[in-house]
Image (cartoon, rainbow, N blue to C red; front, side):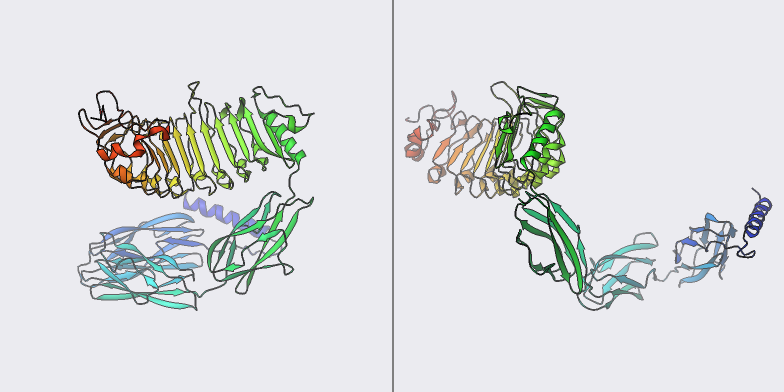
Length: 618
């Protein structure tokens, strides 16, 4: 469209708007001018000169007006129509010592913006984009831009401004972005100064930080929990000291324990609750105060689900299955007669599903929030992931999965606050391997978990989260572990460790014996190589050690006699050598002469044929 046609269309539109306006008597209201330019404040050139773009975005016709100075020019249209536009600003080489400056003005409708145009000379110099930066009272990291033609040096006048370094070397660009950390402000409004130097030139940036103000942030303003729930939690962030009060004055009796207050920061508010055995829901409003600010939190506890509700949930699970093995539930009979269902105090507390098949494991399982025992026995799944709703199993103590297909645990299992035993197993006698076996971090983080067992599975690795767990008994029998990780030695409550019949094939993992209360350790049939390190015998708590059926070599150290080990098995290794004698101290130690203490398996003189001490009496 040419300019003449464009003006005609605009005039017709203007005439139409004027003609349709009876109330305004011919007046037409245009939208407010809107102008945005990039960059917003200045264009800074190095001494050699260059070309830089200037972007213009506006809803009006615009005009660019160049300021004084023949050392730069504007390339492109000097005016344009509404929309997105761009021109180039070109600076020639500056042969002088000092920097030179000019301005460019952009006019769009009633709005006008000016842009500084600066070019460095040969003398070291700098230009600051911002001379004053506002900071909230919480502080934090702030960025600022320094334009310079040389290296710059930064120094903070006030100690609440922290710089990562004092001196910075500029790269080849005209500007660099730097950072400063502002400390939190617990008092009144304050101003700090940051000195910026480039050669003999010096300038500064002011940082203005607001004073402390009361602030409360709640993750949720209302928390609804089930009647069986004994814990209600919500995240609180406060800017200062905070206290808790209750509407009406007193804490209700069904909230048995609750926080009273604390310092500034982020916290998890934990309210301990009694079970709601009443027929109606219970409600309490908690008032959280910080300074003059008050924030209400409403806690709602629903009634306990009754036995009839559990019955409906079980029926939904039964109908969701593709097959049920030999289990047949008669919905007209009492739940206590249904195979695999265990009741206590009118609740379903145990569920054993044997040879059931599911396309997807039904979400209704999560509604059985009274479960303490859950077993999948030889079940098959198209999608083996447990639904997120199983996070409601806060009373679950024992979880088992047996067969050829392992379930997949969702992240919500971290809510299993009572889990004690995890049992995952294939079938040794039928040669079945439990496939898809994984020990997730979420389970390791459960403080009550004390026993973890994987038998005849394809478990390939152990998670490092075990190092921070409370697990006391750890079993991996016939798995696919290729290493025994050192972090097991950090398990402060590990009492018994069995990693047996796995393709490890590494030297004896010395760090494992750093576990402070480790009493029994069985690493047999793992293909371990090398000698038995003396550090193994120095374990203060070790009572039983089984390293049988590996590829160990060398002689037994007399440190064994001085250790606390009472049961010791290294049969079927390549210890010692043909014609060598076992140490007299070891041979005569009564712990190793009378092997009946460990069913005769601690016969250290009986090694593989043609290896070791063939006759301990020689």
